[in-house]
Length: 307
Image (cartoon, rainbow, N blue to C red):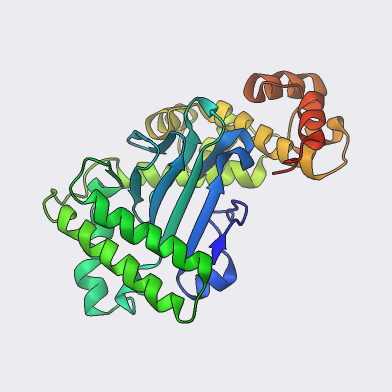
């Protein structure tokens, strides 16, 4: 089955996966970034390993340490528990992506198995492998792409025993990637772990309390650091300020409300934490390119409204 479940996270910004997919430790996603507010999947993480194939467009995959542009037909591996965001380059329309997300136990059989310990855990622990791109000229590209797309087709057809065949394709793909990873340095270096945990905590705090009056100090206190260190932490990890991130998240939530409810624009403004309707309109237009009224009118009249 190919899921088109809307992107959702819990209060810790862990991506939520459909219950039936979570039960079998694997899911195949198809996403059109046009269906995401501002053509992006905001900062999040998940324990699952992720391998994506860009079907159309150019998509930026961002982590605390890097930003990688992935072109049509290229593939990218996202490691377990890596905080990342996915953004259409220059917010261009038409970006589409397939993704296989799988728990280590999907291939290893259990968390304490020899297979998991030998072939999964070393990759998960190697933070040099937070993101890894496969381009068409790479020797391993063809077999990995073939396995990837075979698994997509198996999900689409859902023939008898297709789950076993999918696991076989994912296993072959993983084995090819492991051979590449073996030649790469193993390291846990990079961003300070404490720093990464702080940014996760503050992002989770903002996304839980965005509808309330928030100050820089309140955001900083959530991670038990000073306001100055809070600002530095945001700049180091996601290359923006706490206030800008807060406003962007509030606008994303407001856009969803404008599309999915009949609440007045003033009510949406208040429920998303803006101090006044005028300020809401100003910030919304700066980020989305439309006033709240224009945004609702254009998208509600569109066949793709609310997506």
